[in-house]
Length: 271
Image (cartoon, rainbow, N blue to C red; front, side):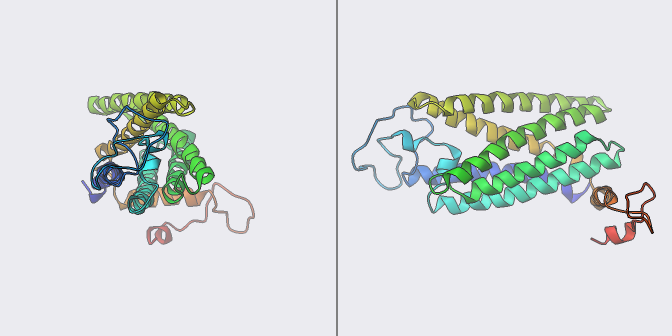
């Protein structure tokens, strides 16, 4: 067992705790309304609620979408931090999982595609976290449009890979758990998109709840990699680097890629 086993659960714990803290800050600062609030108005007079207490009058602008919670300072600072740190951890997890499957002689286009989609998900998270929806709406929506589908595709591919490499009953049990989480993610993302395009207060609020469910579900999915990461070592990183580097290695005296590769494993291991 190695220290890498802590990484997936750390991502889940850090990100889920962080976004709930962002939500609490946004509610207390009157930037959004509480998620349990289902009563909205067309407009509100000057806010009469005391500082540190939830808003008493809510409009469509106060619906607690995750992005909306992280729009204004000071919570926007924490929201950006969570997005950046979380995206970095996602890339590391995806790379380690990719290398781990290569070590198990399961190099395939599915594994490569999973790595690409995972990194794409991370890139979208960076954009979402750093371009707040009220100040850079187009960029924020582009980031969300990249991050959410890429995240969903990543967990779908990981379900396929989990079944493909499963050997023991516990492996198959984990695969079943991941299929359940993926199903919840798919349903919540589809419903969130359907509800979000409507101007109805009720449907917008439901879109926010589905968005929260989707994000937390995906983060829990990432946390399940703790099950496999007990077997991850530094050699796993080397395996991933060697496999990636081999595609660009060439035979001595040749300008084309060859199966007889001029790669130095020792130099890769020093990275």
